[in-house]
Image 1 (cartoon, helix red, strand yellow):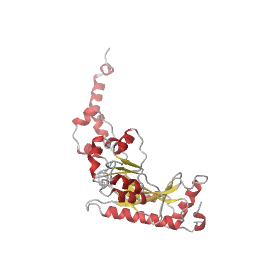
Image 2 (cartoon, rainbow, N blue to C red):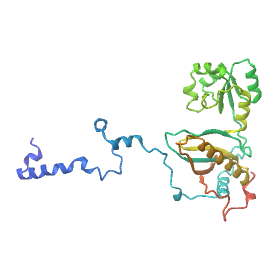
Image 3 (cartoon, helix red, strand yellow):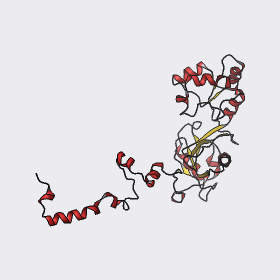
Image 4 (tube, rainbow, N blue to C red):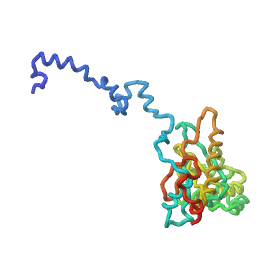
Length: 298
């Protein structure tokens, strides 16, 4: 069967052929420049374009929302709403949490550290210690409060999926045994694999266990640092003190990074175990805040 174009008069075919170059995909590029265009893999490989390379890399910094578009709250107002969300729940389980969003590059270093609050949050950390069994080091680790101590005992528990601890440290004498056990694939994604770089391979195991149990460890993930900062029964003043200590410490961590890396606090969000997040405006209370006395206790 003849094509539809062959049935047209010669004059009409000439007009159509003269219009075809104007309908090439390339002519639509300026109009679609604001959209992500999906091309076949073969075409993408064959065309070497600087703009295509930039698109593959993506933005260098994590995208953060515009704070001008958000409703922000004073600390006492945020506490008022969060306490309402926690009504009827176990007060000793629910806690206030702070989510600190950082303005930072994607390929830059992350912040990780430990801090001690002015007012204890009483988050009992369960510590695992990898050390030679039957030694003085094992006895000291158990006396300091470690919940799981030893070598093969630890390896068997992890391989069985019984990871009932929040932190894991290792004595240098057991580091080779830990590496041979091949637990990195299990503990690594959880942030529990001991290493010299993170300071979790230590000689004085007992003192480190006591420090970890008394302090709170935090780590930046996807430009956000999440830390529990208070019990639900805390007063606004206690929560303010812990929040201030957290922000000051994170600012020091950011300032101690490479001089070429810029990392700063962009937004502070207060939430609770079962409540939503409230972006804070830096004020302690507003004209509409309730009496401070009603924002404490259980």
